[in-house]
Length: 229
Picture 1 (cartoon, rainbow, N blue to C red):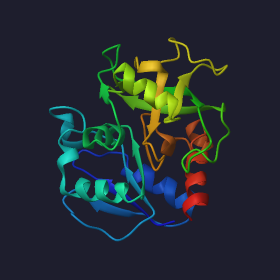
Picture 2 (picture 1 turned 45 degrees about the vertical axis):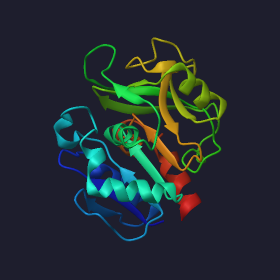
Picture 3 (picture 1 turned 120 degrees about the horizontal axis):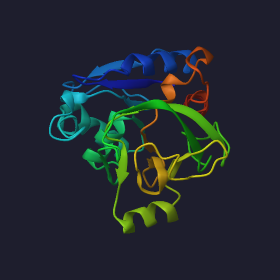
Picture 4 (picture 1 turned 90 degrees about the vertical axis):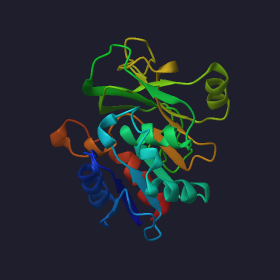
């Protein structure tokens, strides 16, 4: 599997993503600078976490207009797989590759801890390494992770199976108490209609080694490697 990781001023998880992809997919990803309008053909593009452009204006708003994102959007429309993690999720919504927006956490505080996640479907290249209904423990680290969309958009996401992950408790229940940021319907990650683009707030790249407290993120990268390798 050939992969590329987009790097912006303020990105801080590109090396984590690089290590995860190298360890699981067995090949070193390209690191692509935000000003590069083109890069070699790849099977997977990762837009990593961090604070692109210092989160000025809105999180991801400036990054969405970088030269490289025009290329990412063009490739996504041709079916190339795109994974946006945390700030990457914010950027994907700002580019219009995914619906909705990420707002300030309901608590108005930065949240950094492991959270429970429920896998909504295994029928995608991103979630093929899991079973539907499986619960995971994966860390979050964000201040603006509160997913919002209007009711019609949320209903459409539900009807079309575009919700990838929801925040849940240890028993897999999607309760308000298990929701770390106030996201609508406990949504932690969504797909585009074709399920070739995934945006999620939790950091699976930080849950691939037992030394970090969880290996539940491995399934995402293993599934991608199996589907795209």
